Amino acid sequence: MTASLPRDSDAALWDESEADSMMAEGLSPQPDREVELKLDLDPSDIERLAGSAFFAGSAEQAQESTYYDTESDTLRQAGLSLRVRRAGKRYVQTVKAAGAAAAGLFSRAEWERDLADAQPVLDEGARPLDALLASSGPLEPAFRVDVARRTACVDRHGGSIEIVLDRGRISSSGQEEPVCEVELELKAGDSAALFATAREIDAIVPLRLGVLTKSERGYRLRNAHPDKAVKSEPIALDDGMTSATGFQMIAYACLRQFRLNEAILMRTGAADALHQSRVALRRLRSALSIFKPMLADHRHEAIRTELQWISGALGEVRNLDVLIDRVGDKRAAKPLRKARERAYGAARQALDSPRQRMSMIDLAEWLATGEWLVAPGTAELRGRPLPEFAGEVLDRYRRKVKRHGEGLTGLNDDERHEVRIQAKKLRYSAEFFTPLFAGEGRTRRRKVFLGALEDLQNELGKLNDLAVTPALLDQLGLAETALAQTLTADADARGKLLDRAARAHDRLIATKQFWR
Image (cartoon, rainbow, N blue to C red; front, side, top):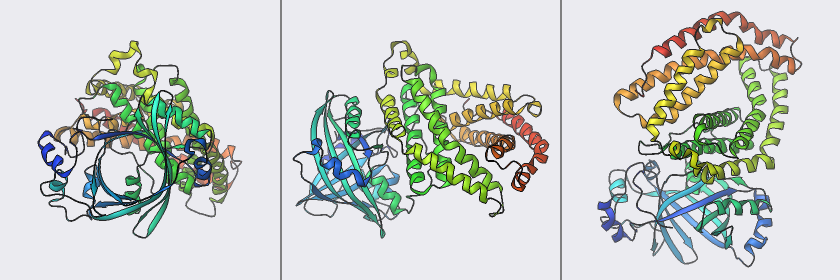
């Protein structure tokens, strides 16, 4: 598939004036654009898939790829990657530009050229790499990817698809991690064929939605962050987008954050990865709520239900993590840690279930190809300019926080919880739509606004902890213990927390809106 040059990359690198120099370097100004679905599988299952009918008659081919960058990762920061791959006696240099990844599909521009050996070639006058690297220092090997690859081409479900099975390792700075993945690349037809084929493969071996390219994994290993919990990342929205495209970008960013943390959580059981997994799910559920009027189709409710289910499966573990953090004495917290082990075991089982694995693939398919994208009744909503839609959303949630939070000190626990929910939706909306409201003045007002909103959320969160702790301790059979007395002693501070929450609410409402 081909496409015109991308115009929205991080550094706005590709423009008409560079076409001639790119041609001189062997880079096409009309780059191939990959559309891939990436899927992860367990190393123990790879032989079963390699021996399936999909790969009948195929042979493994060894590939050695070295990725290059400057010491300060200049290319990565510009949304580019540069690799030299050796397969047999052939050396191929590939430059890839980060593109709009949506709903589990990787769509990226790439430029290739043959080389005489493994040394990258940047011809005189070659741009944009030459210009980018001019003041950034020399290229150096950043990491290496060695895989044994099997390739098959199939016609399935109205699409022509190349299936690639890779197993091997990524290595950088003396560290390694395994590679075991399937990539489905669409050669012709509709993207829906990729998901249908993925389900066929899942009937042979369990699959999980993949959200990291090999280059991203290499950089995470290079920077010693493979098991560091992943917070939400900026979303590349712009004021020329429609509401439908904005939703896809936001939802995919949330899905990506969840899958990254889910993988870390399953490897380590770490509390911070679990917390960020739940944050990603809350953000995703908020996005479904924010854009709900244009999303109604026969799968919307099922998608929402599955997200609520897995969020609930992680909820008990998170509640226990919060309690454990509140207990200073490790010996006193021992019953909570034992309860946490049991709760995590149940959560781990849910994460490892076919239901969870397929729910993520179902979600990705719905985001990319769902009926909501073509429903005649919501065409006008989908086509609305995103900044216009965003402004109305922020106005609406601010009004809800203002209305629900009036007389906050006199509200009951359920009513305060509703204020907390609306405050979260306002915060997530503000974070989602931040790129649409640029400029020095707006940036300054946004920081003040989000700071006031965070203060309100913190106070409401502490009040919520006090409200739910007695029931949680009773559920654990710890209501009559010394530990319970320690955890409920904070209830004496309830009045002060209420006063602080009310003041935080008043400050927020008095803060100038950054989107207006």
